[in-house]
Image (tube, rainbow over all chains, first blue to last red; front, top):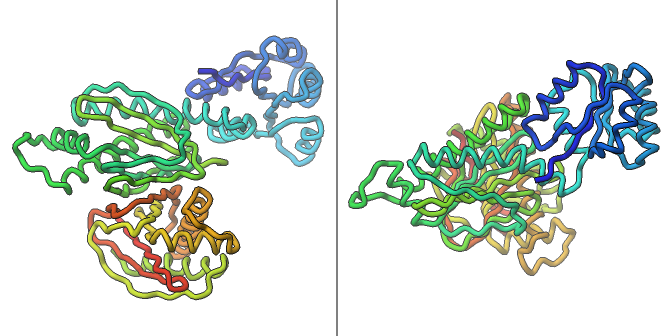
Length: 287
Length: 152
């Protein structure tokens, strides 16, 4: 997995520590620091970062001048200017120099992530960021939850869903995600797996009857717990994301297709002795 | 669930549909349903949360979905309910729910809405509530368009 490399140009140790902390749990990795303009210009070609965060006030030149020198080396360099003031004048001058985006101090995690995402916006980058920063949280949660709910071990795989259509034969519990990014998570499985899981979760013997309704409710509750825990985990990483889940909607039947025209989605499959427990998680594109 | 919560959704429908080319709109009936219903062929689920939590399902036949998509795309013929038509119906569901959310906010109930999930199939079950919920049957140029609303 290739991380997105960030070079931080800032003479303040506090700012550097804050950026490191925010980015430590994401797909962005700080590959180099520079304390002043001279160091930045020297280190840039060697470090070859995907993005640069640039403080406006450097000891030997201002961030604008430093950006200009870096853009002379590579006109496609992506630079985010971070300054105490974010006035129109500064932005106009910055744009003229070729700076991609502007942030005001103190930078919060949410703004920084959104800006980084926007600046490195290409499909590949977006997929990597979603996978590392959001979807992996759900992978861990799925595995742990299946163990805590049903006492089963699972082998979990994760891949991007390129098909744009999700086929359902059995049950699918759809949980909406609000916030930024918005989206939806779908817990789905075949009828046998549903019944196997429901029996264990409800503590029913094979001889005891299990109604369709009970089985549906069991999977709904499991989906609610798993997606809820996943979202909490994301919210712990990004303190002000405030992702929330909506109440589950359930569909049941054979040969159902769920279309996801404008979503970037991922398939997570937990293979267990009770059957495959699947989670498809999709995020709205362009947010 | 409180019957006054129906109005924001019905008003959204009456407000949005004429803007995208549908003039002949009718409200047929409102009924109370228990937990689940059968899909008519195409069902879009949108969840909402914040001051109230719930789900809305837009339920229609394949033919109605194609008719709506075609009108939305300036009368372009839609023979199959393909990706472009699916996008149009998803977008419509998003618009209707976002407008309903604005109406709910005006009533002092702020909500955020989720991305729509569009399901297609024959005779599948759709459950949006563990209790009773309200179903409004609307008509667009003779096509039935069902709006199911569940609030926790």
